[in-house]
Length: 387
Ligand code: NZQ
Ligand code: ZN
Image (cartoon, rainbow, N blue to C red):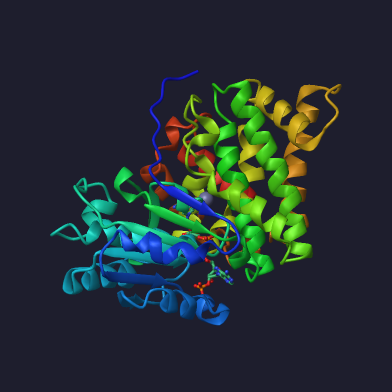
């Protein structure tokens, strides 16, 4: 067990109808609100009107059109500009992880005199940030309970995970009924994202029985509940449990005391969505089984055996590598069974930029320090196997 420090200052308000608490939540934060949202889903669902109706005393400024894989230019820059010009007191993020991630970068940029990219690229450490409240509409990233935001900068093919304790949302309002309208594609991608967050924490050198059990249960829950959500998008219990599994994902709570893994699949996927703007969860689902096969060896096999036996119920009375291969195959088959395209070519990625992406990952993601270290050559092989 490794030493650790842990503190999550975010208040979770979870359940059906919790939006009614929004006025009381917002009361503590001043009058001028920047409301951030995506490309239309909250207008279609009626949530946009509902939020406005609940906050008649507030002066609300809108930042619309935040895209999946949120962009530094224009979204972060526009948001920072509004915050500074309008002396915004608080950001209200209404949408999925992309809207919330973008809001986090805006929150820090609003309190910084220079170029916000200085903060996102860790050139300068933020000293302050605006408070953020969020209403989450998609279960996937865990951004509602963590201190990170992932921002893309198109012209340099960068997609950077910007993490700072200042970025924890103050309050996250989580009503699973708002995820009823999430498409099958995004529901499946959200499941793959959350499963990979757990896998990134599970596959490491030093774990505990407690954490292993917690993560194995969460993986099983995600698979069962996601199937139910796909069969019946309005199954409240399934949507609720899926949402909670996702909320824990990036908060470190699944793996307190574990050694670091380096989050290799995320390091690889961030390049895929930076270069090709693909859906994050789909990229992860494609990479995960190929990464697993690539790192399977005499040192890592015991982890795969535990994963295979406890998560997929594979017969433990077999040769260890046979169990490991079956576990990897079961991971692949699950993603495929929920409708995820399992080849890079199916999401518009061919071999032409694999070398360039492998180099970019090797230079920027620090995966030479991952649990099983990955060189540029390893990365090229994993990407090629994913085609
Ligand atoms: O833009 P709108 O119209 O809102 O539509 C969105 C978007 O098209 C739609 N959607 C969201 N809620 C909906 C809905 N459609 C119908 N009904 C609803 N209730 O879904 C699409 C995808 O939304 P997005 O916010 O992009 O999805 P997600 O929550 O999966 O976020 C993905 C982003 O989060 C980053 C990813 O890299 C990616 O950029 N991540 C953030 C993390 C973090 N902060 O901790 C960790 C993750 O590893 C991840 O990297
Ligand atoms: Zn992720």
